[in-house]
Length: 370
Image 1 (cartoon, rainbow, N blue to C red):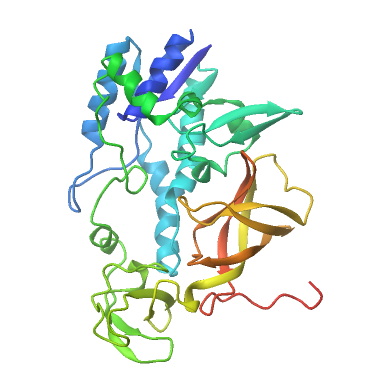
Image 2 (cartoon, rainbow, N blue to C red):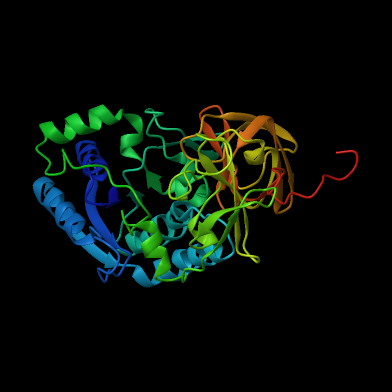
């Protein structure tokens, strides 16, 4: 079939192109430029990535397309990203970027170019069971990216291939090397989706001006000054600038809460402080891979951040509200991030964390009898 591959200029999408071609598909590459860079906040690698993507397509003899989706990215991803930070939450732009750009805008453009399916270099798998498509963890669980793909639904999964989800990362590098792909030794990219690796505080300050304020302990003691509550996230240790000078000597400090309206950042010593612990969280705007939530309540495992090990929990769903009750206390569950649900190797979906029962989490008590 004709497959439009999102070529990023990285080794994963390069090997995805190779695997698709070897499987006999008619493959074309499309490079998405989704950020208009002005060079003010550090290097953006889009131009180098485009050249690498073109070189890979040239090596494999694939037609190459370039499309600029910067306006769509700004409207559908970045404006939400900024509004969340202004509100004191910590958003995950990769989740929204996947849903709105890579598997919506890109998918629409691929179809306009005559493609039957799209493909990307994500580490994930798709299968079909009992008439429904399932989003499955990658074979290489250390590289699995289903956390960032949980907002995809049946239409997107029906139209998508994930070639590298079936192999280990070490095999990806070896395939790229033996095929003499120019990206075989290229470092994996990190940073904000399509914006890249930058000094994050400096970058964010371009859009949300710094607003210095007080840094206090939960008991009210003044221990320092912050540069703006939006620059910090729960559980953060680095960049506080107070070391062990205050309180119990030698204990590092961590962000445990934010009062955006009063412009106060709350910090406490000890990475496992009770100020960071929660057993319950509420979330909103759920997305379910199957199109609807499982029968509620249901038990599953969940992640509240990408690299976290699976955590056992019970989930209650009521319309657009999700209540998650963890079997064990969870550290630094952060409003704005995603809680993503799993049943074994299958990703069920996820939702955006709104509040927790941690001391600064803002979770209202559950109704009596629940």
